[in-house]
Image 1: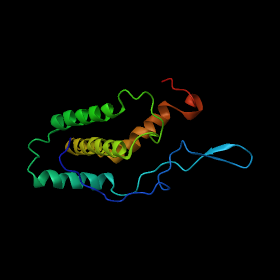
Image 2: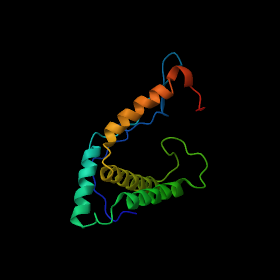
Image 3: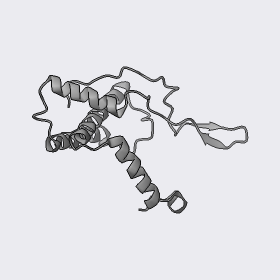
Image 4: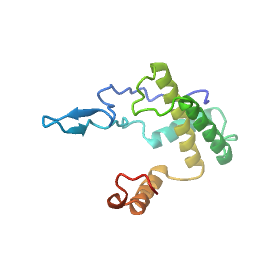
Length: 154
């Protein structure tokens, strides 16, 4: 686990971060999804990249933070996230039944994953936001909604 984390310190209220599994019942009895969960706008991926670069520079850790090492650290952190879900069976969106401590532990481990992913992208000179835009465009072509709607087949 990473020893220290940068904290954006903006906590959204529960009403700001509703999950799509919450539903409202309209007057006609139809269900419509509540507002989807969404991230706060800050920090951006660039902010995270900069904060981690400063954190690494201050500790003279760049000598250790080469692509292979960052990838292995990322895989290790994904394993730590996996452990939190192990033996629970299916877990519903919004993590009903999880304690605040379990949620915070998950938030910390997911943060480690994101931090290592962003730093790996930086060291490999991959502009992650632009790569996501290109990948989403490819996915739209590969999986047109009209052909795959409601199907998990690839």
